[in-house]
Each structure stands twice: as C-alpha cells, then as structure tokens.
Amino acid sequence: MVIQFHKYQGTGNDFVMIDNRDLKFDKSDLLLIGRLCDRRFGVGADGVILIENHPELDFEMIYFNPDGSQSLCGNGSRCAVMFAKSLGIIDNETEFLAIDGVHSAFIDEDEVHLLMNDVAEHELIGNDFLINTGSPHYIKYVPNAHDIDVVQTGRDIRYSDRFKEDGVNVNFIEECPNNSLVIRTYERGVENETLSCGTGCTAAALSFALKGAESPIRLNAVGGELQVSFNQEGDIFKDIYLIGPAEKVFEGVIEL
Image (cartoon, rainbow, N blue to C red; front, side):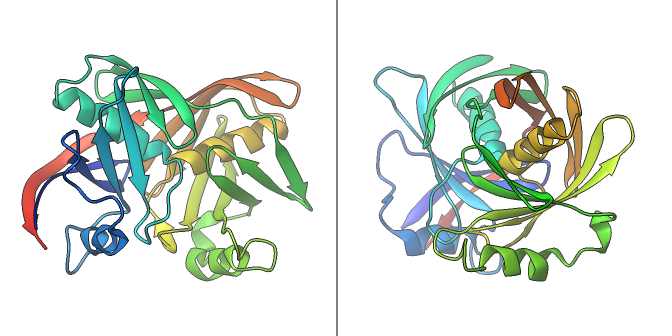
C-alpha cells in the first residue's frame, strides 16, 4: 500500500495528516496506524489524522493515537485546520466535526484559534485536579516541572487502580510569574511524554483559573508556547480558545 501523507506539528506535537476524502484509507487497520506513527519503521508521529468530507460542515477530523485509540486532540485539531486550508477546503474560518462534537476555528497568520467545548465538570483529588477537555486530564502542580520523571510518574498515575481501564493523561504543572505555567505531559495512547498537548494545556489553564488565575493564560510546553483564553461563570468555563501555531513540516509517500 502506498500512502501519500503530510507531516504537521503544533508546538512539537506532530501528526501524520492524510486527505481521506476518497475514503481509500482503511480506518479499521489499527496496525497500520501504529506503523505510520513508528519513528523507526514509519513516518513517526504522535498520531494520525484523517480529513474526510462531511455533509453539513467543512470537514470531519478523525484522530488516532499510535495505539489505535481515539480521542479529541487539541493540537491535532489546530493542525487539521491548517491542513484543510492547504487542501482548499476552507479559507481562514471553519466549522468541523471531531470525536467530541462540532468545533469552530479561525486562522490568524500562523496561529490557529480553536474553540473548545464548554467545561462544567471537574474534580479535586487532594491537591490535584481531574478535568475533561475532550480527553481526560489529571493535573498535578509541582515545584519544578523540569525535575519530574514524567514517564515513570505519569505512568504510575495513568495505570493506577482508578485510571488503568480507560487511561488518563497526566500533566505536571509549575506556576510561573505573569499568569503563566510550565507544563509537561504524559499522554495515554502515546504512552510517553509528548512535547506538547493541546487538551492538556487547556485543562491546566482551567485548573489555574480554579485557583484564582484570570484569562488569558500562557503555557510553556517543551515544544513551544500556547495560550488559552476563556470566560468563567463560577466553576463553568465557556468560550474556551486554544491558541497557537500549526506548521507543515514536509510531505511524502510511504509504502507499507
């Protein structure tokens, strides 16, 4: 099988993008998904994203983690918007379908502003937070994020009795001056640290707001900077935007 692909990244979170409007890519072949994501035997990525037609919206984004599982991916969604523009599907504004429902977004120069779904449910676990922003995120505040063994500590939480069945993403957060955070993330499905996580940055920003911070909040991930803006009504968050760059790295073909 010969597959034409495009490689995109959003603050170091990288994706194999495939134009599947002709439906030739077999979405049920999860081994193929894993092979494409393999950094030694495939293209190498944190996930695979398919762009397909939708009868009412601009397009549908179908996202796969390397293990074949599906969830919302914030950075992947921003990259999908840029990819859709390059395909001529959209101009600078769009409405599209993702696994958690309809999203809108707009492009401002090299940045994509992605509207996330409202968030009303969150849980305090000791001093930590559990917030679902399309994917479930465990938020743990630490004195120094750079000192954390993200893989081991993240894996301990992800495979703990409470979360081992469905999994959870684990974010380690360090508070910084000027309404900003340092964030490092262990992602389920990837089962490793990623350079950035859009839904994780969103969850971290909302947890910071629950601690008293105001919108917008800057997040310094390993792969770059993102920003989250929102309106807060008590413990309910609306008009949540994940904002950051999304760039094409290269394109090619691979035979598998």
